[in-house]
Length: 364
Image 1: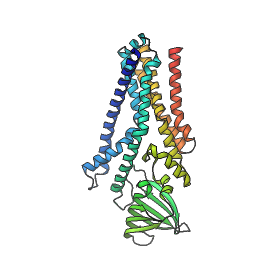
Image 2: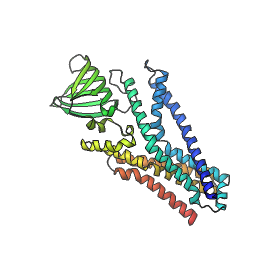
Image 3: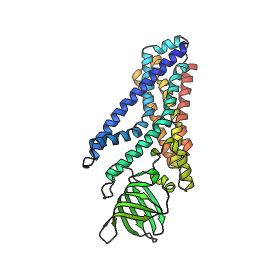
Image 4: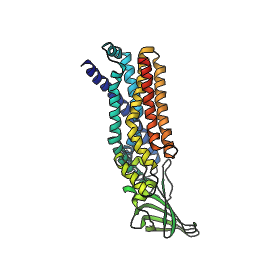
């Protein structure tokens, strides 16, 4: 009974610390992002304060989703340090609890946070990210200059048609790749000579053609021409352009298996979607690894002293684990490492190292 009460107490303290740190980081990120968006849209008269706030709200989940491992790490470190400084962990040991019994509640909470982040928060983040991309595409694609906003990642796709080859650049995509905004099309003939460049506010995939609206056509040696509607032939369908136009972070966890199947059936590579799926599946275990790293730090604090140095060591270890995770994901995206290995190796390695260190310290 005492162990159960202490377990609930430790879990509540840990969850409160994680939520407090996470909300603090979210507030800071939202504020910084709002100011950055205000700077980028300063010359856009159609952008109101309310629209800026809406864009910031839609962008926030995608940014804060990456903060969860650090929120769990710092929350666990602060929890164990405070418990040790107040001698609460000493009392827990005095009543017969082992290190495994008082770190199990935070581990379970971290695992549940990871499950929630993967199954609930990620779909919300993906949906909001797509909405933010759509609004940004409408804002920055309203000019026919074809220039991208600073720091904006564009999407590219190549297609073949009866007229020759075309390369399409888009600032954002919606509706599963059926609608594009901020579009620039480079058309080549069958001899791979540039025929024309088309800049358009938006494009919609129709039956065998892209329907461009508010288009400006530039032909070498001629003056540009403006069309309210302009057609470009295509042999692509939404499934085929999905891999090229839809970023993995805008596809929710529940839609990733279907996205992988569609990409494979259409002949496009699905490595990015596989990597995203495996990373989301491994996320609960990555958070568990962060708690185990924090437990190593917490134990050293109340047994050996040196609070500042050990906390710094724990933060550094967690940061290196996170950097290793991102490096492995980059290798997986490049096809150098299999997506399963790239996603699971850092989390599994962190858990094993944490368990081994705790076993060495506690059980000799």
